[in-house]
Length: 250
Image 1 (cartoon, rainbow, N blue to C red):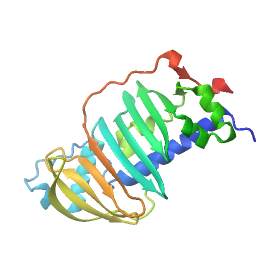
Image 2 (image 1 turned 30 degrees about the vertical axis):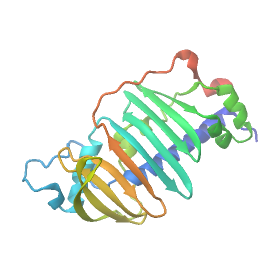
Image 3 (image 1 turned 90 degrees about the horizontal axis):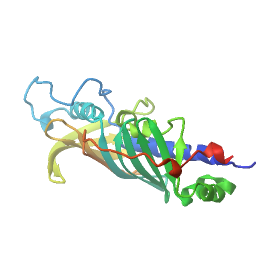
Image 4 (image 1 turned 135 degrees about the horizontal axis):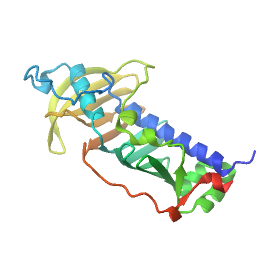
């Protein structure tokens, strides 16, 4: 079977999707869906965050985090011996820039005003393109590949990437909470136990109660950090001469 540039593109999307799934498995908090809430205490009482039930803490944290319009996300995940790193700013359809490295191959993703592009490196094309991977890498060169279907939209949206609608498996159990600091900020560390292993979620002690980090141990170990919530940023679309549509390559 001859593998065309289109097939290589499909395989690229599959790998990016896998990286997104890995990220969601690491950071998904469970609980509410984040609609219409800002992660505050609702004015009901003045109980300190650390004194609340761990599940309630995570519910507040999820509402705050998924309620953000933008976030800076960095982290590394290892699953089945494959290391995936992600470094990006997610601002939904308006603006998005992400760098993903999967098993040593790197893909950059840009999103501007609902349009999306990706720029895989030669290693990525070689790994994912099969016999024609090297040829595709040469044809594409250093150009940005057009994503006409908006396949990367989910990667760029905070709610979609970090929220989980997966009902398979057991819900995480939050077993305790204690005050600590992380990067000089007062946080509450919530202990997590589930089928994926143990870990901790670090939740901002002050409102809004954003999740600022997730650390997982065990077989699928990793760490994700979140910052710059709701901060505006701009992304510039690639010049037309620096873009390529894989459908034009055959």
